[in-house]
Length: 499
Image 1: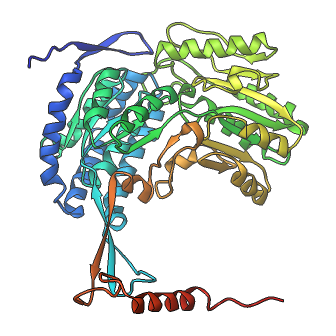
Image 2: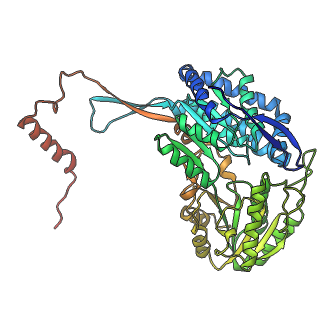
């Protein structure tokens, strides 16, 4: 079959300049790529954890040595500040590689179980790799969110095909290159660039899928995967609430709000997207937030530390931000700072008050540099409003009463909560990270992040080698009588009659 090819044009969202053309892998080429990965899987799965870990340590060293190139590639495709690329992408990925290189064997080694009933059996659980895992990664953190699935999938013994966003293919190709240059065997990791149809073909051929992106696309992935009954990991959107109680440290809360809402120009699935503040401190909190937002520097940079906020990465997000703001203002919201599109894909960091849940900006994911702040009368009202959402990825609570903060955290309908902090959950590699409701399925990090790329197999081994078990054929009255007596002895011996 002759396969037609074309190219993706890659643009720098901060300057609008074209920076590259990347060949597209058409859907018809996905099947052969998966076949190559499946052939490589037969060897890769047999390697020891220690052997696989050597590639991870080598990849970590490669990243340290090539950090300037990685940062330049990420920033050229996303426009984000270099400091954010360094901390949230390069540093995170080095830590991720170290963590799974050190801990994967402990999480995935055979587990011996002690059966409470069948004492004549030996039982253990084996975590077997799925096979070929397709990773469909997004554009907002193109290095972090690609490596975040690629690394545990590889350590679990799978081969991987990465399909990066069409907006950030260069970073996806860099992931393949770094593993190739540290000696990873051929076809254990492949990067295929393309549009949604290339990703859809991955779902049709792979043995498992990890997808990070929008709710709408995530549902399509899940529906398509269901046709083949293959496992899926979905990290989808969020509309993450921040609750600020009257006893909060206002300076810390305001600083967290501004950074948590505007980092990466608000293009984080766990950005602070709505803020609920108790009435006694509302005015002072808003004043501090506005003051801090006015001091932020937005633009392009050539060196670290020249800007705080970059552009939006894609035109569609700019349109969403404008639509949400327009809807809010028409319904009575007031813009205190920002609110306007600038040249290119830049949008001013914006603070919005007089908002309520009739507005899109309080209910739909904005994914932009906007902070809507709503006054509430109590912690109970804030909790009710925070849970009034179809999303459930992350949340934060600010209060000096840490016991109350932890209590509210347990009542929030989200997969992750911070008390007196925000976004920090993602950096805790030991704990599961993921969403509830329409924010996704499955979990990253810890043993969850590895085991979701495996199929657990329970093995039961007979210990004594009798010619037949007592309850095998032929059935007889003596066996039934014995089982009936065992039933009474096992399950009624703690029973006491009450008058």
